[in-house]
Structures are given as C-alpha cells and as structure tokens.
Image (tube, rainbow, N blue to C red; front, side):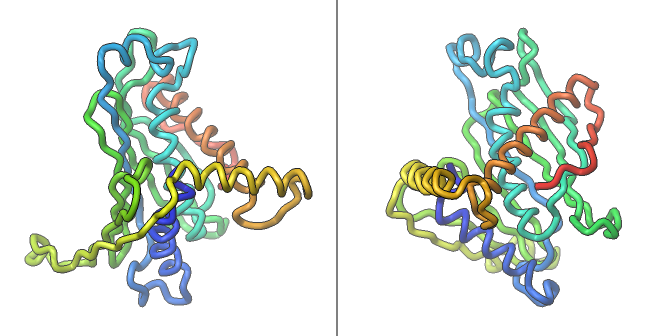
Length: 257
C-alpha cells in the first residue's frame, strides 16, 4: 500500500514539518488549507458486468469503498499530521449507480475539524475527491497550502524505482503561467511497495504477538488499525449520503482519526 512507500513519507514530511513548525507562516509550505484527490479506472465490459465490485451482494460500496478508500487515507494521514484529526461530515455531491445500485462514479466531500474543541469553523478542512470506473486511469493527490501546493501523481500504485512529487510556490496571477516556481522532488525506492507493505505487516504481527495492542507508538499497529476502521466509517457515511439524496452526513461526535 502507498502508505509504506518512501515517497509518501517524504511528501507528508514536507507538508507536516512545515505546518507543525513554531511559525507555519514562515515555513515553505505554510498552513494546509485543503486536499483534492482522484482515483479513476476505466472498466471494460467484462469488469462492468462481472467484477465483484459491481455486485450488490459483493463489494456493494463500489468505487467509493474501493478507489475512494485510498483518497480518504491520504487525507487522514495529512490532516492528522497537522492537528485536524476529527471527521465532521461526509457528502456525495454527484454520483452514478449501476443497475444493481452500486456506485460506479462519485464526487465526494469530507470535512475534517481541528482537535481543539475551541477552534472556530474556519479551522475546518475539506477533502474533495473523485472516484470512478468510468474514466481512464488517474491517481492524483494534491495538498493546498497558504504558500505552496504539493502534488503527487500515481500516488497509489507508483512505478518501480525513483519516483517524484512536485511542489509549486505561490505566484501572482500575472506569473501563474510560468513554471519557474515548481520543483520536482525525486525519491528513490529500491524495494517494491508491496514488499514494504508485507515487511511492515510482519513487524506489526510480531509486536502484537509479544506486547498485545498496548503499544502507544504513533505508527503502531493499533493506531493504523483504528485509522482503517475510521476510514470505513467515512465510506459508510458517504454511502448513507447517496441514500439520502446527497445530504451531508454528520459523523457522531466528530470521529477522531
């Protein structure tokens, strides 16, 4: 999974270390203001007719539970890192269902709120994402800051070897057409992503076997398992939004990630 890829760590570190500094206004990225993501796959006739993701008695959450899950995880990792770790609401603003009522295209909004209970509404941050089986291959994540935008292409299934992400600094409208403010950050990866995932899974199994679920490490198996559970709660809320004709669904008491 992309969480284990060194590019993801470098991408998040650039954003989170800047935001978490004593003075985010003086950092290179500035304060995080939002995330936009997309994961789309163009399904062929066989996929659309026979794949389990198309079946109400199979993976009935369709593109939201499959492709959207990864977009949500990117937001969880980013927002949690900058102290905006509670999910406030989830909404599907546009969607298409197949003949079995399974979503095959969806545009979604997930609102996160600051952990500080005294924070005002302006501290809310939004993940907007598009997931679909109706459009050609695209997997993109973009984090917006007050001074920079950071974009990563192919963030879910990166190619082997050295990959990159791009940061672009704030430009005036008259210079927005220029590319001089954008920098490609290259990150080598000698081990395939799937190998890194299974290696980390093995480490977690050994820790849980030895110490149970009492590990307080921020990157522990316990924390990541909780994040997966909360990720699923968001997916469930988005499905509920479709059932409610696109109404925003509030998560109880602000689900913490």
